[in-house]
Length: 286
Image 1 (cartoon, rainbow, N blue to C red):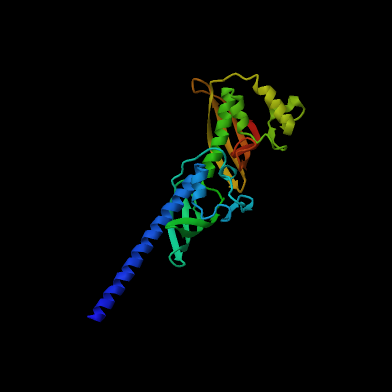
Image 2 (spheres, one colour):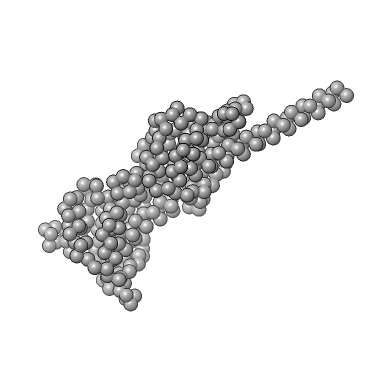
């Protein structure tokens, strides 16, 4: 009887520990997912509350040009820009290592914008249970900044928006697609020869564009692209394509081969975050 009672007690203890471990893992997963959602939604108070000590916790992640280790309690707007975003991360491949009942290391893969044609970030967290609630004590995020469909779509969106703004004579929207703060921005085209050369760059390009755009009227024309090819490497992207201009009746009134080079602006300052055009060139086609 004593042996049976001991076996039963041991089984009950193991079952209880297993159930507690499963509950802890579920609670940690939910907390980490919510923390990520709060970060991109710029909910500063909620995000900071997910850390055991916002002032002393370790945060480290790689960037397109190196790595960052924000000090203290970093402002979300410094990392994620000024525009709140709703994300529903897909997470998988969790690995837990518990250091007793109140501390654990977690690693997992995270897809912010769906798995199709995207690569996951590799996420690492140290978590600590404080007063029965799991909190983050350390965060490391490793993101693959190689080419993927999400970034390709952002590059194309910047190009298409700039072209549409030109035909709508929308001065502010057009300028917002350019990295006007870069002294090396350039535009090349043969019909710039009256300015003295087939290109303009830097302040001369800005001055010319500011003057020229004010003479434009909405054309009512649309464009379509073909033979589009884009390549992304770190903070730089370049795209080539054939562009046809169509009048209100859908007739082709112009055709040209274009190249655009863009750089990614990482913050909301200096024109807004995202891909910005630094070079435009085209050749007319028959």
